[in-house]
Length: 462
Image (cartoon, rainbow, N blue to C red):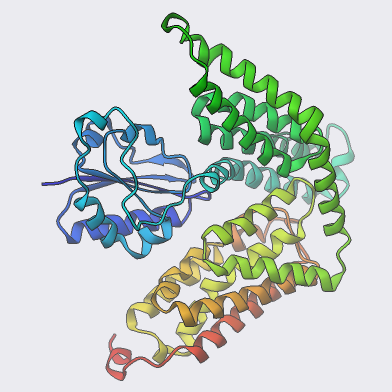
């Protein structure tokens, strides 16, 4: 019997990772196919594949927006897919993997087999960027919440040297947030060039942070370090006796030197000017322009419910936290909570529009929405995209616009309602809650108006 292995992973590693894994396991079980799925989520790698399991597998399914250590799968047929595809079409991916031909013996020492034709890919720069973001997010979460805790002693309490508030600020702002950009850059480079890219990436990110280039400079430094280290690794040839010097001496030295000099003399100042201009513009936004920015970010959060557009809005807002710009984060979280909450409300008030299974899914969506897991809306969006997705986009745009337009701010990049009890974590908490409530109602009303009634016999089933 053919066996399969798979890897799923996303930058935040809270919902998509495990939804994709569950979809693949359920589809394989229905077909009677053994499968083991490795997940790369918020707590790290779980259910790690062993060498023996990989060796015995007929094919590999890769559905990961973060680094999946793909060199392990050399000599195996590989089917690549976006997380959204794994969630919606797990059965199709299982069939594609089973249909793969074994890799010929003379190719087994080369790269892993190419992606199956027609399968959606999520590789290249997007995957590298998301890998960096996935390692950065825990620092931002920890740092933001600890900074918020320091404000429980008063907004200015951290100015008193040696006080608990000052020490909390040192942990959150001067340590966790100080590591944010270097870690972002380092793990972008790591995703590109493996361990060879880590040192130049971390140094480039630290220089970006120190020169004021911010997270934009960190992204540039990460890609520069990664591709440079990869180029050195592939193109510098040494005698076999000296090859061992390359990973520990030659690549770290040359790549770090070149990246460092470029960041100081060429890249740092222009990117700093760009970052300063962006920061000044965001700080100067009036109510109307702030609302328009919130509408844009809010709509992006619901457009693909956790996909690349959603991640772009989220990454942009998280990056601004290090520059003490907190408005966009409030808009993004309010807008990200709105889709599943709106769908939960719709399943309550217009039951005839939903099957019993959808009404049950609505309960789970409500819990996920409260936790800022936008992916809770995926089952509804996948089942009726042309009616549900526009409703979600409008509702989230309203939530994002209200949050920023009314001056709400947020210092924590995740947590949903669970960050509300922390003093000063949310600025203008009333506006934040109002934005979520209005966005949720708008979403529910539009979904209820656009969706058709289901057949009476289905609606009456329990």
